[in-house]
Image 1 (cartoon, helix red, strand yellow):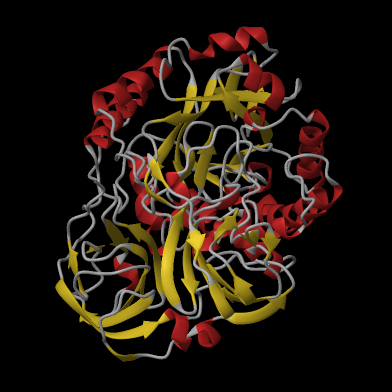
Image 2: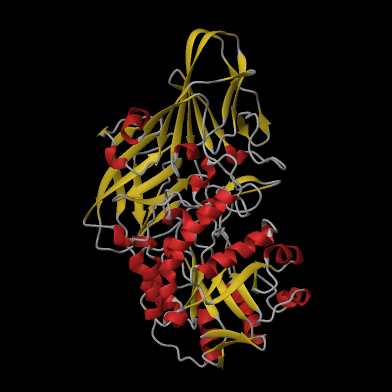
Length: 597
C-alpha cells in the first residue's frame, strides 16, 4: 500500500518514488492502450495518470457511457497487466484543454448555473456522476487488490476559486463513495493558487514546467507533511488555431527530470502520450488581451510519444535516465507504429447542408434565440431563421454573443461571416455588438439594405471548443440575439445539428458549390496501419472516416492534417468531409506524414 510517513512515500513499507506519465484513455483508441502503457513501463516509469472526462461519460443527465474508448476500467486493468500503478483525477473539472474542462454541456441549460462551488444543482449533478464513476473504480483501489494508489480532489482549483466548503464537499463525497486511497490537490507553484486551491489536511502537489530544482520552495509557506511531488511536469504545451506548433528540446526535458531525481522528488510527466482530441472534444481559452483561442485537434503536446505513439528523442533520453537511476536493464522496445500512404482520394458525392436540415437536424420554434445547450445539444452546429416583415430603411444589424462562427443569409443568399477568434476584448466574456471584420485591424458596420415586404434572415452558427480554463467557462454556443437597429428579432425556427447522424444525409453526384457542404469518397487501405489525411484544398470543418469523427481542421493552421488510427480502417473505406466554405479541389491526400505546422 502507498502511504506517507516522515515526508516520504512508502510502498509496502519500503521508500518509494512515483515516476508517472500521463495518458488519457479518451484520447487514444482502446486497441492501442496496451502499446502506449507498455512503452511507459519500459521507459522506467512505475505509474500512469489519467483524467476522467465527465462530459463523455454522462452525455445526457443520468445516461452513462463506459464502453469503447470510455472503458476506464479496462484501461486501468491494462495498466495493471503491464505492471503500472494508476493515479486517477476524476475532476469533476479537469481542464485538460478539453471541451468545458470536462464538465457536461447540459449543465449550461440552467441559465443560473454556477460551477465549481456550492451551487445546489451543480452539487446534485456531481453526486450522481461520482456515485456512478467511483462505484466502478473502488474495486480497482490498491486496498482491494487493484493498482489505483491515489486520486485527486478537484483540479487546480486555486486558478478558479477559493470555496473551501466546496473542496471539502468533493473530498467528503469521494470518501463517501468508498475511496480510501491517498487524496491530493494540485495547483501551480504560486502562493495565491495554493492558498485558494488546497485544504490543510490534504496532500498537496504542484504543477509546473521548469525550475524543478527550486519550484518546491513555495511549499515552505504551507503545511504539507508529504514528499515533494510535481503533479504535472509540462514537458511541452498545446496548440491553438492561428498559433504556432509548440516544441521543446529533449535535453531541456531531461535536465528538468534530473532535477526531480537529484532532489528525491516524485513527478508526473504531462503528457507522456498526448493523443488526439477526436470529434468535437477540443477545448479553448479566452483570456484578457487574447480573446477566444480554440485548441487544435492534435494533442501532440511535444510528449515523449508522438500523437500516433512513436518514440521521440525525449523518450529515449528520459528512458536512459530513469532506468539508470533505478538499475533497470534496457530491454527491447516494441516496434514503431506502422504507417501507410494511400495517396489521392477523390470525393465524388456531395450533400449540401441546407438541403439536409430536416434529415440530420431537429426543428424547434422559440420566441427568441436560445443557445445550443438550451435544446440539450452538446456539440455541432445550430441554424436560426426568422422573417422580418414591413418596410425598412438601411439599418445596422447586430448578431450578439456569436459562439463561434456565423454565416449570415438574407433570403437564402450568403451576406457575411463572423469569426469570434478575430476579436480581442479586454475583460469581456462574450461579443456585445458584432462588427464584421475583414482584418484584425480593419472594421466596418454592417448595414442591412432597405426592403419592403419580407426578408428571411438566417444564421448558421458553427462551434469550436468551449472554454476550459479561467473565468469565461460559461461558454454557451450559438447566439443570444439579433437586433435590427434597436428592434429585437423574435419568432425563430431553429435547427439543432449535432452532426452525429451523417448516415441520414441525402447524397447526389458532386457539383461545385461554395455553400456549406458534405463531400464523400471511398478508398482502399493496406491493412490497419495508421495514416494522416491532408486538407490543403479545404477551409474549415471536420472529417469522418467509417463513421469515426477524426476531429476539426482549419486552414489557418498550425495543424494541416488529421490522424487516422489504423484500427478504424477496413479494406473498403468511406470518408466524409464537412467544409464550411469554398474549396479548391474535391480531393484529399492520405499519407504516412503528419503536418502539425
